[in-house]
Image (tube, rainbow, N blue to C red; front, side, top):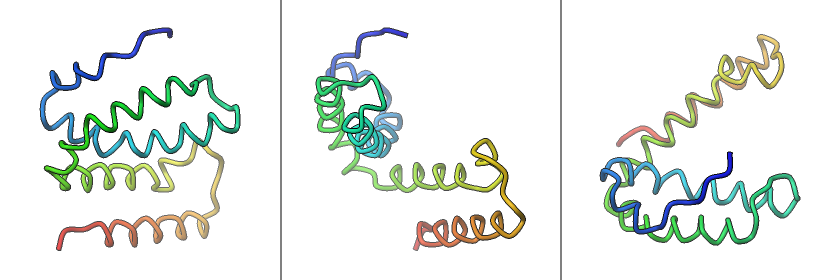
Length: 114
């Protein structure tokens, strides 16, 4: 799928809630892609990383305005770490699944509202 990237200015056309979620997600995606590019494991280039950095920079005001969106994104990511969601990575014993579940529960507790 070869598509150009949308201009940074177009991010303003997205609803505020969507920009907040992107503001929470893109820095994590950026960090992962930077590591994968250095290892030569993905097709993204240094130019793509610069474009992604521009998106992250453009979305900083949305992130600063609503940390609750960052927390919501974090909780969604924690849901994806539950043992049943990770079954595609290979089987887990009941003991291993319990360890993973306990870790996710602990992280969810840390991320809960005060």
